[in-house]
Amino acid sequence: MSDTTTKEAVSDAARAPAEKAGSGDATNGLSRRRLESRRKLIAAARQLFVERGYHATRPQDISKLAGVGHGTFYLHFTDKLDCFLTFADEVCDELEVVLQDHLGRARTVEESVKETLYAIYEYSDANPGVLAAAMTNTAMLSVEETKRRSPMERWAAQWTEMVLQWRAEKDIPSDVDPLLSGHLIVGAISQGMAYGYLYQVDRDKLINDIAQALFGALTRQ
Amino acid sequence: MSDTTTKEAVSDAARAPAEKAGSGDATNGLSRRRLESRRKLIAAARQLFVERGYHATRPQDISKLAGVGHGTFYLHFTDKLDCFLTFADEVCDELEVVLQDHLGRARTVEESVKETLYAIYEYSDANPGVLAAAMTNTAMLSVEETKRRSPMERWAAQWTEMVLQWRAEKDIPSDVDPLLSGHLIVGAISQGMAYGYLYQVDRDKLINDIAQALFGALTRQ
DNA sequence: CCCTTCACCTGACAAATTGTCAATATGCAT
DNA sequence: ATGCATATTGACAATTTGTCAGGTGAAGGG
Image 1: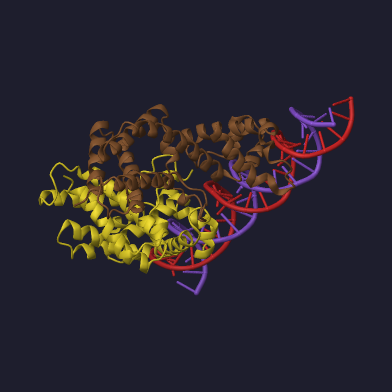
Image 2 (image 1 turned 180 degrees about the vertical axis):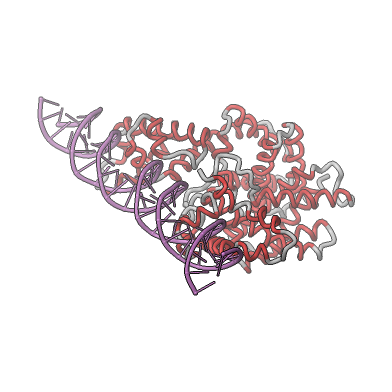
């Protein structure tokens, strides 16, 4: 097994800084070809995961759509799950940008919750189907611990941060467990938003209801 | 017993009636052999789904462990997902029994929530790993609507019932949306319990915290 | 300008898996 | 015992995955 070659895809970032000093475009010049292949693969994977879902998408389909050889897929990802998690990570990053923008406007706990939900809608409008494809419990995809955080875990961590902050600012009781709350909120939001989509619930009603419920949970008496 | 008979009838109805289908009541006498094969398959599937997880389990492994021919698997299930959903359904039934037993003792909303969590722990203690294996978002397993309810949906429906009842008894405000609440609660509980297991949180603390949060969400001010 | 080198890419291939089906076995009724 | 419908079997074709020996292209030295 050629460990070094296989691992290389992941450690792209690791080898770039070795080229320090010289010129900023050193990174660029070294693997422009490689980066381009990777970019095309991820773009194709994203399209197929959204259009067909995880299981109906084969590595060969991704390579084909990306316009690269079948073997190239395995030079960039160890397998389909690896590719999916990369896609999900990318989506997380994108949503986080939208989220931070919305949260800038929020002053209270309730507003923060609402803005989060609005951000989710905004992102979903701009990227139909992407969140649904990415926001998936990866527990089912592999038995082993993946070592890579799933989107759900990432969001739980983000919420934990926010709860910690609110607690420090005395917006919510001090006996609220931030880590647990972060997980509860993520679970409720993902299930609630999925429900709203499935049953075509009015957007503003859904957001108000979820926000109220979460606010109640956080400021429980 | 009525459970298995019902399931069998459903499965039979889906598969057998292609031909003239003489007498409908023949199910009982005719298929003792068939039922036995099915039972062995489901038992094997359960063991493997729990031990290895969904993806590491192959239909051929299930057949082999069940001691039946490979083709027999496909006479009882259309594919692995069908088999998994059957397993998950069975788990739901089992949990529901434990749940109903616990809920019999509960008088208030808060007690009901707590008893539910205790029931989950009790079932998990008696059946290690089974809930984790069954309580999975099946969205990732197939793109198409499965037409069969996932465990999560079933539980959401159960919670909806309970919320409706509480609302009728004026234990919670009348403007709470039962259907949405049912989904929020299921999302929060599954994520919260998974968190508690992962981080080895003290059982009673976890139950108290989750119960308090859910109670707050339901009786939001 | 050619040649060397090295990273990267390619697609044919072996291995593994899935779902099918014609042949076969089983058990029940007559 | 015989006929018949149902149930089972395992070999098989089709599909998919991951690997690898060889090919391609760009950067740099001669």
